[in-house]
Length: 517
Image 1 (tube, rainbow, N blue to C red):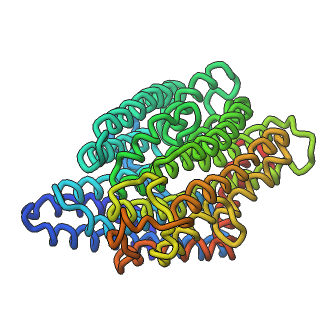
Image 2: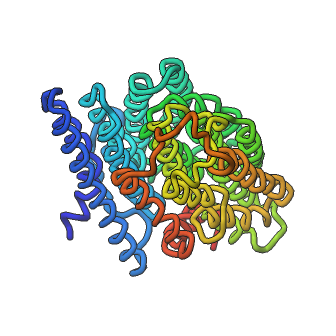
Image 3: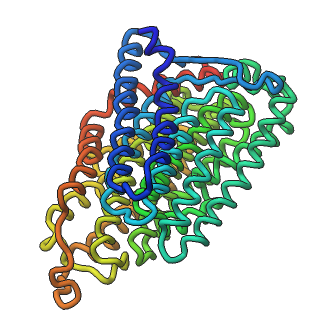
């Protein structure tokens, strides 16, 4: 047990890196071997992440919460930087989500990636290490290193294996993210110069700039810019539709399912506990940006004719719920909310934001897989080119309906609870803005039912154009989608285990920020 406690996170973290180096050693002509090695090596962190999930749950039920599996070793003494990692009720589910989507992406890619196979799987495994590192890091230098490690592989995945405008999209993604990263690094340095440490746990205890809202706000916005670009929150979202549209299918799955969550995770791991005064002071701004993202993203989806671009803009809308939930909690921290339930409402709003991070990864990951499956057959994503596919592709139609209804928040599927918790908490704190944000729920139902269901699945099938060119889902496609569909149903019917995880994290974060429960 002591071995598991000390080494499980390190093995999960660096196993994909070792796998990527193994892939480099395999001759590029042995493409099938590269595919097999990549998939099976990705299963190891997935199994360990599942065991981690269960083990942390057991500890949680036994009354042990907070950061577990902690490892701290001096790394760069001249900087005061350390290899400090750990996992809590916030990061454990996200580590599992990362491992799951990576394995499914590699499994799917093994059938569709035909050129430069070695480089593709090497970059994908390297990207996995970067994502794991962000969710585990408890040192700002380590956090920043892994944050940047994830940037380079995705740049090449879009630029090499993307579609027609892939170079433009990859450069736009890289430059946007780099600008945010530089601002974030400067803010990290400001925290270091104030406290003499990069350790996130120590910084949380020290609360730098707590008595200086001007300097706290400057540092806040340096970090905020880097995180908001990644989320992406309006108006920092414009890189996302191009990156999603041009990325290969598995790249879009990881981009929406995991990389967007890195930004939201940073709000919870860094901004809220370290700069609670600035987080509270600017919480209302986060609410406004979240509501604009929800409504704007949903209405823009209504205007799309490219199916993949529509799903991309839906991510802007759905990640707006995360910003709304976090911003509402920030407003509650100011103590200006007259309702007695503000503490519990703040926790509920954060519960919804965290649930949305997880559920959006599952749901939108499935939707991007489904878009890729159709594109592999039709070589077009034009919504107006289809019609009547419900009769010709009934299995595909059924799976798409489940993912689509989960995305619009149908009760009984995972997406419903995320939105419900966000609105339940936010209505007690920022009622008018929460009511405006609810417009997005209605518009989401509109674009799912009208733009997708009506255009793609209902109506007349174009026999002359498609004939026998379209066929229903095959074995490997079903195997890719079924784990995600099962999770949607499970969390839709019984979200309590995951809610318990996230609620404990929310209460702990809000307590550290100044709320007494």
